[in-house]
Image 1 (cartoon, rainbow, N blue to C red):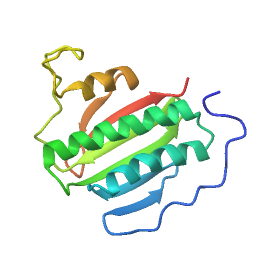
Image 2: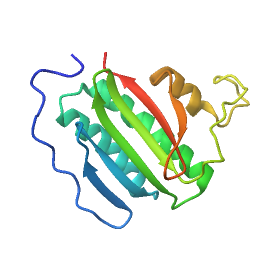
Image 3: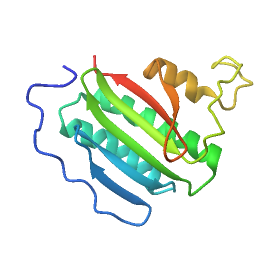
Length: 157
């Protein structure tokens, strides 16, 4: 069962604001995090995504997938924009799964897939978008008040 009938209806406690990490609940079951990407905030947001989803009754496998998707998208933002980039991460439940959106301030730098196969010895990067195609098919890029956002849906079934 991806999202159980025994889901927690009470909102889980979110971390208190601290330098580089400001998290708030969404109307939907989930959160929005304003993050300055760093070695401490990056893994904290990834873990938070899994923990909040499990608190709402999502299967561990789906929560793990969402953690991986968040990690790939925030990692891409850091590679494009540089360290200490401000990003906004949204994770929340929808009728069809778990929505993930990562906003970064660089609207001109769009994601590009590698032309090399994922299993190529020559491929040292560029696997993240192919991985996203598998884990969250139909992901898209859109304009955002921040710059751009990558939007995807991780199915719960």
